[in-house]
Image (cartoon, rainbow, N blue to C red; front, side, top):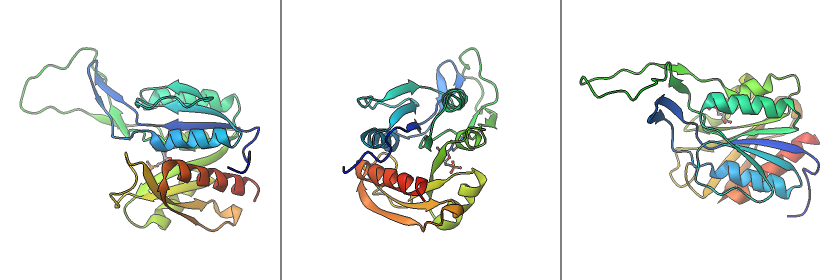
Length: 223
Ligand code: C5P
């Protein structure tokens, strides 16, 4: 790696799934492993940045030289993100697979087996990256998206609706990349005012993709 392209910057990264409690022993979650976020944390550190990694329940070891804060639910994730961002950070990277919904009410006791059907009411979780982008001290905002079709169209509408500077989209219709895989391929889109054209990152290890994403961030920052 040629250089310290993020020297002196503080990067905050969200990673992994969130876990939304239903009762004291059950939850709603997803299969995110956190690999992409952890690879980005290492790449940002190698680029000279100070890194805070806010992680949901994952089995990955904490990379050397990185501050890690563990969270469980989306609401906890939001509270920690707002605190860290409002203390001051330069770049915010949202790789977390935040559960879209949580139980409307968390039962204080284990729900007992009863009838043949059980209905659990879910309510929408806050959008972490969109909320951070609305803060007064708004960092450079990077989001991710997993799409199966119309990548460019969905990417540009998410850039605008979530107020992002950059979005990396992966094509989840391909089974050889993405979720749980050690490899990934992405297309990066920048907010219109940067006047940067989209960049395709060919299939490679998540650590190589992470370094290329860091280069994209540095390029946009100096555009
Ligand atoms: O809207 P969608 O889930 O496709 O957006 C994905 C991007 O938004 C990712 O960067 C993800 O980390 C972030 N996100 C978030 N909070 C949510 C949902 C998504 O930060 N509640």
